[in-house]
Image (cartoon, rainbow, N blue to C red; front, side):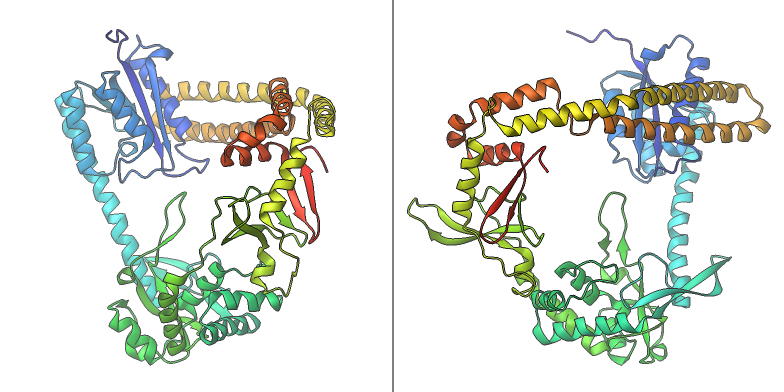
Length: 547
């Protein structure tokens, strides 16, 4: 059967990141709504489709809502696309031209209200292409400027900010000129005590050729990171791989020269005293861990800071790390253990399963649980006995099977907790209603200002836009408070339906548990167990709702 619904008008909005200021997605949408109300008066609220992408660049079209909009356009669900500004759609001329060509072929018009372009007319299409050319030019110019800035920064050897590496503090220095602007600059200053720690880490690694042994040494001697955390293999490797520690000596110069890395500093700058600064080293993407670029893209310069590790020792450390990559630590996996993620040692550390290749009389692979602190510190910080995983898992399962819906203390505890939380949260209801009223009033004020903006002269638009932004910030704050109160009233509260489901599970748990699959058993245990603590002799079982 064919779809008889009339095509709708799409609103598309995009912002690279959330700032709470400027042309927010909410403001873009409201301005587009007003445009549709004036220029498409026959379109009601049900005739508008909203597509929002937040946190995505305009340099590409790999955006979830943008792709969904195109899919709807190809399925003839859309008659026009309206956006606030041209670069909300794309900053790439190739992508933009392809889009316009596709929309024209489907007889879908495209409107940009800021530039007042409408592709339903020939002049509108021509102006749109011209504007998109300048949009891409701006993007490419920005990219070139960033690269130029990197080269300018390399002249100064300055520290660009962020978390300072162990061994150094960030210190303000004289102002420098970058890209024609005077900016405050920073350099790294040595912290002697931390620098000695860095030297120890390099020395131990070169001596032992093992991240695990360096980790054990630091744990055994109660040596923590500069932020008070326990050292891990990952944090140790980060220190060993950081070129900031390498003294800019002859070995360092030859190393980077042979790798054909772009060296901004000449050989004479490698004075055997200062350290190395690597610019353009990482790729940073929103929502993803930083990635290290290929070394050929780095810009290496001699910094203003004092180096800590000789070029020869730093280079040898890199060679050892490369050799050991095939033997790097991998978390063991067990196909049998049921308490992974639930079991903790009395010392507070997590206990992981350690599987052997031997089998017991039931033909099960034998495994035990091992305290991570005990393993890392080589029994120096914890010497708790390793429990048999096969036995401990069975004992815990038998205890859970004893629970029943009629006489279980577990159900009684949950009932009391539910009643207590419901009573405590009654006082929040009045405040929650007040906040909802304030949110509605704020939205009403924003809508009024958006309507006024559409009718106002250009001289007043900046003032009105600022008022809209202020109200939007207020609205976000109110919504956060509403979410907080809702969380308080809902947290740890079982609905009547959930409570009865839990009762139902317990009613047949002892009969059905043994015929469950391994994954089903794991899921079932996590329904009731908050955590299990091993004290070296006994296991202590903590159920949800208990202290």
